[in-house]
Length: 491
RNA sequence: CGGGGCGUAGCUCAGCCCGGUAGAGUACACGUCUGGGGGGCGUGUGGUCGCAGGUUCAAAUCCUGUCGCCCCGACCA
Image (tube, rainbow, N blue to C red; front, top):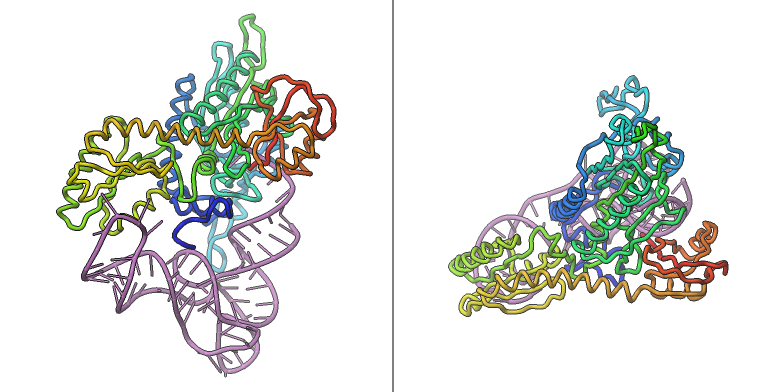
């Protein structure tokens, strides 16, 4: 392996894996399919969490925590739900170890078998709804607006760091309402929250839509989603919001007494985003030099690299760095002065670029003389020289500019890769040559969807919410259709 | 679970075919010259060759078994 990382154009998947490792975001662990999220990677996740958490609180939700273990019997209560998750559940069967006979290790104590096995949560609908039953008596107890930040486990056959790991971190919102309309409004509100977050914080343009039946969450009536396009032309589902109808209320017997003193089943929603967003962030913006972090998610906004020949120069630069740090502090920017004497400036430049820090300031002897600094932006790699006193004015607007620029860039890319097609031939051609989002007519049947998937690997990512009514013919069957749906090869 | 590949220094790998007691690059440590885009030179640290058996005077190398990992497919956020 050379000094740089592989090029996207040569091997996108290798580029991704190497970038994750080299930028110190995460690494594989001793446990297959599980990752260690390293400090630099986790700092980005923490920023995401903080922003999302505030948005959840602002829309009236409260955080709570439910157990990681789910009694096996709970999972069997909602038929579709079991069906969807049964194949990927980790199961706890024993609660004790003991020394092996040969003293060479430990074994599972066969006498410590659990009466009822526990499932490591793949999602928490079942535990939460079994709890909601106790929390709800009257319409006065509703709505229940709960969120939890947690880890979940889904025993996937093939894993990829951040995109699909056996264990991942996420938030899952679970709400209960008196009416269908209210639950539907909640589902859509949270979808909007996700879309806002993706666009404003992650600088990631997304398409809001609804899933077809085959892509729907197990146990939901409708699954809404935000879909983003990665630089290799593949789609990534970045968040989902489910309208659960009364499915879980029925399964767990969650009823309330309405104003007319009659029993009614509550209406539910659930919604979540996960550490998969890290993968989306990486694959949407980064380049062959490394990660690009939008300023709003950066834990370090500005890194100052000193260039010096002796201790005296370093000391003077250090003073300037301190001044800069203090003046940018009031804008909420975190500034790091990289005064390590063990690495050279060039090495540091590359390292911070690899890690995606939005802005680098270099200060050397020439700058000290001229009262200037060299400011380099990570997104375009442009460098400009600024006077010390200009920094306070220029840095905030530079940050906004970077945030906007990477959004615009991603949006332009997506627009160029969003194609309308009207024939299956054209569909296959575009898919093969360009990838991206393809808007086409579909007859609405699962059979057609399945056949297209088998023949091309492309799936219906969603039926976009803003898709206009338009008469057309299904590209596969020729049957009439009134709306285009969005196809893509997906992660 | 199918198909392919790989386990040798922290990392990437050579050595294995054709047995003779372990090597490179990088990283790390120290010194020195350096310092405006991954520096040069010198010295040095570091490996029960995945594990268990077997063959042999001798095994990283050959044989058997076993464990683990990676990639590709079916499944999925």
